[in-house]
Length: 357
Image 1 (cartoon, rainbow, N blue to C red):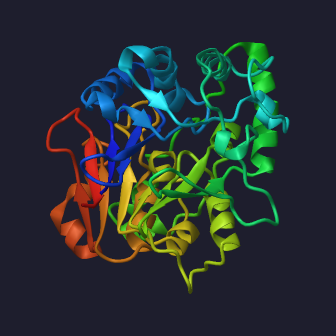
Image 2 (spheres, rainbow, N blue to C red):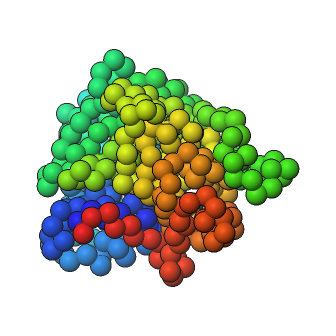
């Protein structure tokens, strides 16, 4: 099996991945949404059989509140949940300086990143173990790093590179001085040129204005490959960085890297999803995790690029039905542009995408 649960994490991300034999699957948790969305994650973990609450990997992609907020609550309750962890991926301030963390680091950095670092150390949890305690990072001139989790899930890191971590280091210091987090996303771009109306082709051709927020650039993004079924977990990563790694792997628009699914970077922001990314990594399913609160994701132009430049007959999978994604529900639009839009059957329960039985 290979399933991805997009938990109802409000405007954030929380993905629970299960792979392996259906009776004894292995699990990966990617982010925990905001603190307010943590109860949904908690319920899901407690619903698992007690002997299946081990997670081979927990990934905290970056320090924005809609990814890290719930993780602070989760790590404080590990014993109560009966949950164990094989490794945690999270780049804290010492990692941004090229240091190794073994135990008890003297940390400086952004407020919630500091709090999470303290919880990891106090719990004695393995930290970036698969990278020998150093930063989870790609390096210029080298192939993207690959690691294999127990049970055969191969992970290929796509983001970040040192250039993004260096920018995040400066931002981390500045935010530490101000004692609050970097906003990360800024004002989003749901409202586009009204003169385009419902012209999906014109929306897709809107100029791509790439994200520049340091926290988003520091996102840990990777490909998970289980038995040949490949998923790109995009976090809030920069599209040009993902493209850079795919090109480094030897792929091109003429020789693309087809995916079973892609978790759209930054909840489908138009600043994080480019035509080039879509053409390099055509995806049978694109997962868009957000209820649209706060930043009004996904952007119309981003989803138009997913529809126009992807392989035909792909599925858009939303973990909420909202005013910001209802544009894509229209049956005639789905028929014309050859895509399928899928929404949760029950409000507030998220969406599970089954990739392999």
